[in-house]
Every structure is written in C-alpha cells, then in structure tokens.
Image (cartoon, rainbow, N blue to C red; front, side, top):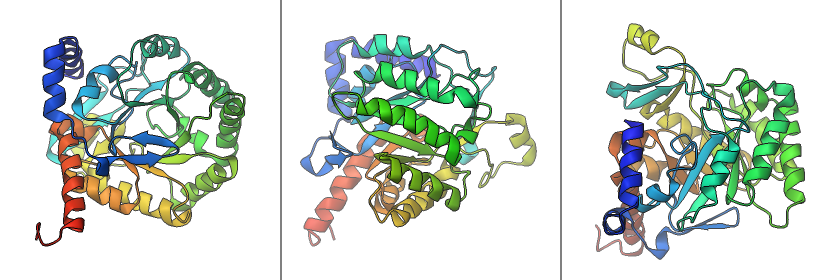
Amino acid sequence: MHGFVAGLMRLAYGIPPLRFFIRKMFVVKHPVLTRDFCGLKFSNPVGLAAGFDKNAKLFRAFSTLGFSFIEIGTVTPKAQSGNSKPRLFRVVPDSALINRMGFNNRGVDAAVKQLKRKRPNVVIGGNIGKNTATSNNDAPVDYLECFRKLYPFVDYFTVNVSCPNVAHLSELQNVHSLTKILTAVLDERDRQKFRKPVLVKVSPDLSFSQIDDILDIAEKMGVDGIVAINTTTTRNHLTIDKEQIAHFGNGGLSGKPLTQKAIETIKHIRQHTAGKMPVMGVGGIMTANDAMNMLNAGATLIQVYTGFIYEGPAIVKKINKAILKKEKIRKNPVLFH
C-alpha cells in the first residue's frame, strides 16, 4: 500500500494540471499559520515525519499535500535492506501501527542524488542514523558521514538515536555515546559556512530523568531542538488481546496509543528547559484536536505519520483549518461563540 500510494503521488506530481488541482485541494495558506523554528521559517506547523520518504524520492510529490516540511530518512551511510519481512502491521482497532523496518534505505549517496534535483518550496529535514552492521563504538563515524554529505541539501538535521528497530541503537542515548556523536556532528557544523539546526529525537521508553540527561547535554553542546517522540516498544493502551499482540511480534508502536505519552513528554521538556529548547512534536496525532493539544503542550511544530496513514492527506488541511479557527475565536470571540 505504501508503494502504491507513493507511485500514485509521483505520477500525479508529473502531470502539471493534476499537481495544481491537488495543491488547490489540500494547501492552506495564511500568515497566522507561519512558524519560526530554530531560525527557519515554516509556512505552517505541520510536517511529514521521517520514515515515509526514506530515500528522498517523494518529497516533491508530497509537497502538494499542504505539508510545510518533510523529513527524509532515516538515512544511513550505506544501503541496507532492513529487517526481514513482514515488518509493518496495522493495528486497526487501536488506530496504530507496529513496524520493525530497521532503517531500510538506499544509502546517503542515493538520497543526495534525489535532493540535487529541483526542489519544491518546503523545508527539508534530514534524519540520520547508523548502519546496523556498524558497532555503537563506531557510530559517530556513520552519523558524521551522513551529516557531511547531506549538509548542502537539507535545511535541518535530526539525529536519530532512539529508533527501537535497530539492534542496540537506543543505547546511543546514554550520556557517553550521545556526547561522542553530537561532538562529531557539531564540530563538523562549525566548519561549515552556513549554520543549520541539529535536533535530537528522543524515545518514549526513557524515564523523564533520562530525558533530562539528554536535554542537559543538548543545551550544553548547542543542540538546537528536540524531536519528541519516537515509536515505543511497549504495548500500553492497546485494546487487542495478548495473542494478537504476540502475533505482531517486536517493533515500534505508533499511532493513537502514543498520543498522551507524546503530549506529556513535550510538557516535561518545556518545563525542564523553561521553554528555551524548541520542540518538534510527533507521536499519536490522529486528529486536528490531537494536533492542537500537542501545540498547546509546547510544541512549535508537529509531524504526522500514522495519522496520515489512517486519515489520509486531508489531515494536514484539517489541522491547519483548526489552527485558523482557534485564532479567529481568539480575535473575534463573539463571532465564533
């Protein structure tokens, strides 16, 4: 289904009248929607999370659906096939997905080749990781290679050390390992002519005290923002029985069961950093109301993935319309009473 939808979108984008029609149908523009985040300007707060456009082949087509930014990847230095199939499952009763993709992608050079082509007027993020075969001790080398090669072609970076689908990757969130990776990346950024934002994506499976350690490192080292949160290995808030859960097996859970956890984590980050660390919120945004709650919790920008799968492209328009409605209520409370 992913391949089918992606193919249709690429086909539609290649037909100018159809591309124009899709853009007219889904894009919402208004000055109220614009956001400033880590020195970048976004036409609205809604983006497509990493994982959908792993190889930077879809961002042009998906720019017609109203997203103000699209995060490509996760990209690794070398191409890799990821984990064995089947590895992606819908949990329909709970509006959730379980995936154990394992950073399947064609490698950073293939992504760069795509990014060199003419790009639409959207912000592009680069989500970077390490190859599965690379040991955690050598992880900084992989992150640095992706960072260097993508630097001229993306607008910001997300350092992904929290995906649960690559063996031992989450161990890179400890203070020592994360410091080594960020030192390599940020030192390289200092050598560049133009400064681009670097974000760190955190796991929902960490305790708040562990997240605090990451936040303290991030602030100390000059990280620009946090992406909260990644998928979870827990099966909390699923209504399906244990046999069904066991049938799906291992993998990261996303979607509706993650909504409240994402909101609570964002609130905690904002409180711990006194609002000084910008947050990009992702996880469990299935409706416009979920998006509003996440923004109200302290996220400046939000990303959708599972909500996009279940609700379709109209979710972006619905969120932006809800933001506009709220702003009009604030400015004209009598009119919208």
